[in-house]
Structures are given as C-alpha cells and as structure tokens.
Amino acid sequence: MITLLRFADVTLRRGGRLLFERLNLRVQAGEALQIAGPNGSGKSSLIRLAAGLLTAQAGSIERSPLALADDNIALDRELPLGRALRFWCRATDQALAHMGLLALEDVSVRWLSSGQLKRATIARVASSGAPLWLLDEPLNALDADGATLLSRLIASHLASGGAVLAASHQPLPGEWRRLDLTA
Amino acid sequence: MTLGLIARDVRRGFAGAAWLPIAFFLLVATLVPFAVGPDARLLARIAAGVLWIAALTAALLPIERLIEPDRADGVLDQLALQGLAEESIALAKIIAHWLTFAPLLLLAALPASALLAIDGPALAKTEIALAIGTPGLAALSVAVSAMTAGLPRAGALAGLLLLPFAVPLLIFAVADSLLLEGAISLLLVAGAPFIAGAAIRAART
Image (cartoon, rainbow over the protein chains, first blue to last red):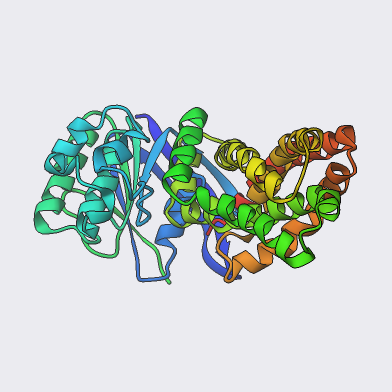
C-alpha cells in the first residue's frame, strides 16, 4: 500500500493553546479519512498542517502532491467561472461537469452563490490531478444534490488510487475511517 | 505559474484602478503652482522634488490592494500549494505592480512637467531618475503591503513604514546621483521578495 500522508508524533499549538500532541496518522492510497470533532478542536488546523501551510511544533509530516479545498474560494471574482478556474489548472471541463457547473462556466464568479462556489473549489481539487485531496468542511453550503455529486467524485478518486482527508463535524456520505479530535 | 501570476496581476491592475494613482500624481503636480505661485524659475527649481513626492504618495494608494485581497481569499495559499515559494510570489507581484504603475507614471510626468515649467533636459533627467527609482518603489510597496496585510487600518501604517525607507531613494534621485539611486533601487528589489515572503508566511493562520 502506498502511503500518501503520514503524521509522526505531530504536536500543534496555536495561540498558546495545545490542539493535539503526538498525533500519528496515515492515509493510504484508496482510503478516505474523516477528521471529526467539536468546533475549535483543530480540524481545520490539521488540514492546513497536512497541506504544509502551517508548521508543527514537533513531529514530522510526509506528504505526496495534494490539492486543498477550504472556505477560501481563491477565484478572481471579475472573471467568468471557467476562466477563473483555468488559472489554476488546464483541464477543468470534466470536473465542472462532475460538479454540475458546466452551465455556469460563462457566469462571472461574483454572481455565484456560496454553494456554487463550494462546488467550484471542489472542481478545482478534482481537476488538479493530485493524488491526495484535502477537504475542509466539504459539506458547508452544499445542497443534497451537491453532496451526492461530491461523494460520487470521491468514490471515483478513491477507486483510481487516490486518497481523501476531510475535516467535518457532520457525517459525510460514503465509507470513511474516522479520527476524533477532542476540544 | 509565475508568468501566469504576473499576467493575472497586471490584468487585475488595469481592470481596477490603475489610473487612480496617476490621477493623484497629476493632481499634486497641478496643486503645487497654486500653492507656491506661478513663478516659472522657482517652479523649475523645485519641480524634480515635487514630482518625486507626488510619485511617492501615489505609490501609497494601491498598497492595500497588492497583497491583502489575495491573502483573505486564499489565493496565496493555493499558489503555495502549486509549489510556488512565497518569495517567488512576492517577486511576481513586484514585477506586476511595477508594470501597472511605472509606465503610466513616466507618461504622466510629461503633462506634469508642463505644469511645473520643467525644460527638456531637466525632464529627461527626471524621467531617467523615475525609471531607475520606480522598481525600488514597487518592491518597497509590495514588502510593506505584505507586512501590513490583514491588519486593521493597514493603509495608514503602510505609509509610516514605507516613507522612511523611501528617503534614500528620494535623496539620490533628486540629487542626480543616478548610480547611488540605482544601487538603492537594486537593494530594495533584491531584499523585498525575502521580506514580503517571510511576511506572507507569518501572516498565515
């Protein structure tokens, strides 16, 4: 089994508060891991740590190429959605279709709803080609249809040898291994 | 990716308010003859200094737009995930910022020179000094912008940070010491990406 993400004895402190200590986790190809826990337990920080955007106080992290979708949309609001996404990756059509966004390709990002923007950030992750997906609260603002599309996308990503690490306080659709953080 | 980022920032600069600092620059140049009187000899003597002060204050205007929107929107995070070092992001932003404000500023110096009674040779000197100094000014703007990104009332703080560091540039530019001005400008361009890069990393939450 190929390991796509490995935390070894990772300790993270933020703003003087210990979020977790000596945390070990491993995400292998074909595996989906959900980080669960109450608000403020460090789910998002763990995702950002996995992405390499934060540095841990102790421990080591090994990661393969990854893509991140969080609540920051990182799309130019004045551009049509298709062009804004193509700044980040070349082939976006398939991912747009998978998230049900093809009809919105020519609509300016500023006119999209928060659910549509969430779909767009997931489409960016899907078209990145990275084996490891990091999703921070992927169900935020998604409707039932969007959640179904997301779980289908994740299933096909796992089937093709990818892996997903998602942080969410609510149950995610599909098969997930769970890791609970405590506040 | 770096080239793409430069192209994007230039596009956004011109689609946004790239003309605003230039209008501000011309406004200052217009006000000075009213403030000190229309004596052409006096105006010609202070003109280079006036243009530089106008350029410095104009450079302050876009400072809040250079880094903060991209930080708040997660663009800086996504760029880092694409494997771009924060220093490369900062350098791309310096180049893009220079492209959006310096050529327009050099152009605006022409009508400004008429308002301030600058003659041909003096204008050529000022244009060369501006061309040498503006890369340093752009670098300084991006560094200060990165250091103040995410802070409340960042604009006022940015002014306090930027203007003292611009003093050496100003002194040598107005004193016609183009080599020393070039040295200061180079120093700023070489140092700013590292300062801005560290500031971007430190601002991450």
